[in-house]
Length: 144
Ligand code: DQA
Picture (cartoon, protein in one colour):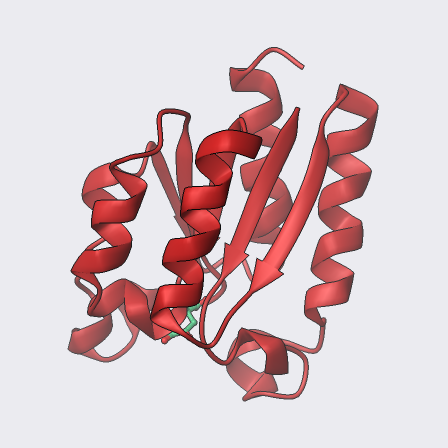
């Protein structure tokens, strides 16, 4: 049972990018923290990042065959992408939306998410810890 953790544009720079907002942990640190929660519960994680909208769509299509759940931080595409919403709507398992920062405390253009209507849960403002919290939720939901 594999949980896909999908990350959108600029998240490859996590740890270096605006650390006052996104912190000092890297995507590699996130991957390790998520695996530490998933593995004892009998789940594997597969973490991906793309700076391209279509790359994220492709990863969601792959998830249709290979993943039991999706955790997605679509970055700025959260606020713009109908294509990512459409792709998520083809996926049958649980979907959790994760934002490192509290998007609701920031600019108004970050307040709307195209992804939230498909999300079974949303986490925002828990820093990079939010990813592992989503993993914990998937594990309890899917009875790992
Ligand atoms: C983000 C918030 C988005 O508004 C922003 O464009 C990001 C990261 C977050 O994790 O807080 O790239 O999704």
